[in-house]
Amino acid sequence: MGNGQSSSSSQPADGRAGYVDPEEQARRDRQDKQFGEAMNSNGVRAYQQRAAEDAKVNAAAAGGGFNMDVDAMRKLQPRWQEIADKLSDMVRAGGQLKIVPPPADDPASTLQKKAADGHADAYVASLQQQEYAKGYALKLKDAIAKYEEQDQANTSSLRKQG
Image (cartoon, rainbow, N blue to C red; front, side, top):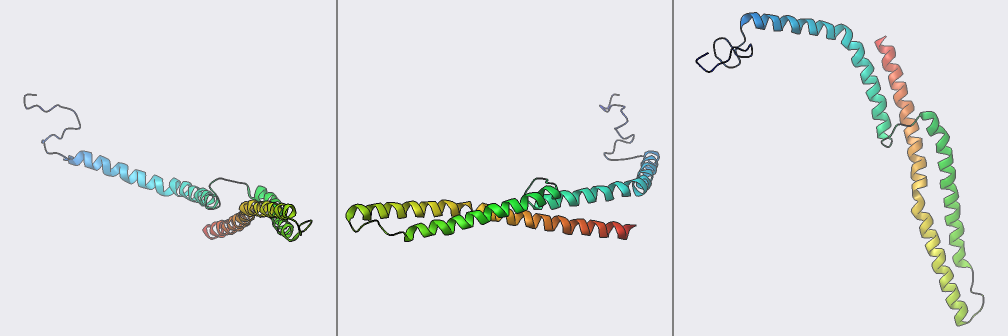
């Protein structure tokens, strides 16, 4: 081959880049048609199944980034709500610490009362930082509701498709 072209099948016979001879184009068209027919019959089921799986994954991801069984969420949600309620009770009780009067009307008792008040403030502040328990209980409740909503939507969609 004196012109620098190899005789490989990827090189067009007439030297034009991108040229596909009519026989090759006809072969490609037949393959495309066969592929399209196969996709229409077999692919539809695969795409429907994949779409349902994607919907479940998206619903789970919207609730926190990991998959959790809805039954596990239903068991955990009341426990987290109980923790949140106990923390709220502790905040209320901690607030009561500041109304305790000093034991006597002297400088030492005044210092003791200031220290006790400072501890009460720190205690209540630390409990209030634990607001995540309330938030987590609420997120679990929302995730359960979203899951049930998505489950109903999937059921309706499957009924419509037959």
